[in-house]
Image 1 (cartoon, rainbow, N blue to C red):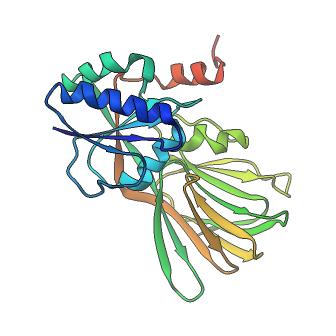
Image 2 (cartoon, rainbow, N blue to C red):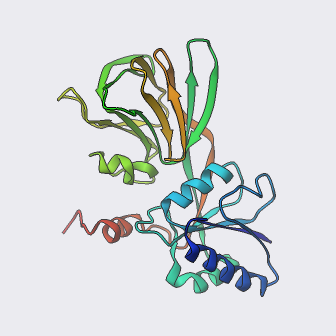
Length: 271
């Protein structure tokens, strides 16, 4: 068995915890490799990827290792930790459970993003939480939007967030978008400071093709999971679909999403 430990290079406690976990695993004769976020072990055969940090560290791990077959286990050492499967305080007992095979694997939807410019060049990228098209200045973004072949009209404002159901608890939620059940594969479209009063968040089935065309403005970017930024220009098109691959997430409980919502946000929806 070979396990990768990935920690946040900017936070020393995550490095110290990685060293502690490495000792525990090595005492069990398990091969351990460590990465502080540089992607040293891309393409190697791994059994598990344990990520020490917050949601930002998890998303950085996805950027580096999202194409690996190995399941991700997020260990929350940040502030919110929606993407984390366990808390650091219970880590040692949970490692024993993992080594004994006492866990569940869930496969999560990944978003594929194609960027087409007017010269016909295509760039293909992926995101786990969200893609954001937005102005990087005080000027409005102007976009045309299609769902499949249906033109949905124009969007004017600071931009738009296109989130997966997993990403619905992130930036989209802060901007007024809904929380989506994690078992429902869908895109959440949340306008940012829309100029039009009638534009509200939409939840769109994941089998649809969503296309945006930038109609004007020189100060727009495409941001993926707060990890990748790409400059956009007038006439550029951004197409959103579901990727063919999925990300495997290791969980120790069958279904703790709604309990986690209450723990993280301090809010019950019923009762």
